[in-house]
Image 1: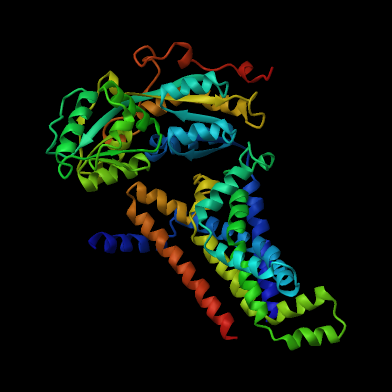
Image 2: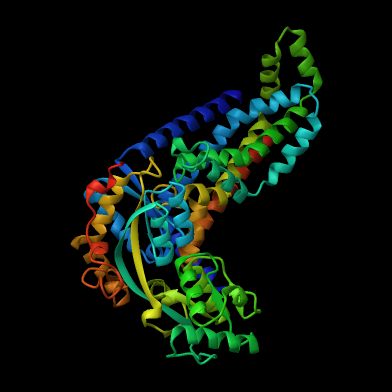
Length: 306
Length: 228
């Protein structure tokens, strides 16, 4: 009996060592924190496979909202991040946490809701539509509901901005009644909740398209400057966080803005969804509010720690 | 209901075809949880022995505390370990966050209370005459502890297996420390959470079945041990 136990322990140990060795093999690892939309749609899987092969690197993708992604970066736990909330991006750089922004892709947020559109917001501009949903929701929360991400993500930040544009303080909105529901989850889960409850929500276009097969919700408002959604990559500042791999981070960002990376982004989803999920930033820099430099490759000199 | 049945069928198909993605995630899950149970075991079993055999002030309070920690919420452990091994944390230099090693470390902490507590209970079950006999034969403390642990090996093994089960089935530490990175730290529980949120229910059900099957196997093993 004791011998059996000993044998089992030995087998366990051998297994651990074996697997540990297998795990340690391979080249360097680059840690990327990203907003959920790029991961849940499968785009980053495609990019990862190509990038890993080309540079013999293992890209580790940790996905969460923009809020947690920036939090990881500020703690020095990741080397590079992709987010979509301009205000927080600028603050991140101003605080010295990150190096320059690089615009890599864009699309639009959708306001989605039940097909019969109980609040009648189809075709309105986005902030006016939200104000209407609030008014109708307060009147009859059994018919009109709004699901918020409620998780500090980029999409949540945009929703707050729209409330501001509509003339409401966010703290007055999210406590104003049962019509407003905070999911506290990722985009996909939030869409599923909105679908179950036949409620309105704001989604980035790509996640909505990727999930559309399982949903009865339809897009009611699909464009306009208020709903422009720009994805930005930034390397974490090695001066603040000496442990981060800035050279690899640069390599990854430059791959994203290169023709090969931009082509990947431009074509992703065509075969599966009938249309691409993201538009490349290349050639549209001005349109999406990025400077020319913010669409160009980064130089390796920017990693030198002064 | 239809959905579940269809999901089950697809799940069996995936398992029968040894879907590479499902297999890879299963093997990683087993490896990480086995390692954490093993790591916790080599620390907790002797520690349990020391607590059981030494008399000291506050002993029963300590045992009470350990037993309370059986139900330590996994997300709390996840958060604590995250703060500890994040690059801005105390052990940040080790670069453990978002790695399988970090997950093993976190899960080992998670299952430690169960292992220590159940080891103590197991050793309590060994009659004092064995302890006394060993002592009268001139054994020192270390030798006594080893003798009694050997005597209670079945119950001690059960403690390790239970710890392994808890590590395998938890999602908090795995998600917060591992980060659910595809091909690196994605395990059964985090994959189920992800695939469900993505609406891929069949894949979730398939991995759920695997998880349940492993738990069943652990239980059968446990019962076998206990019967002997």
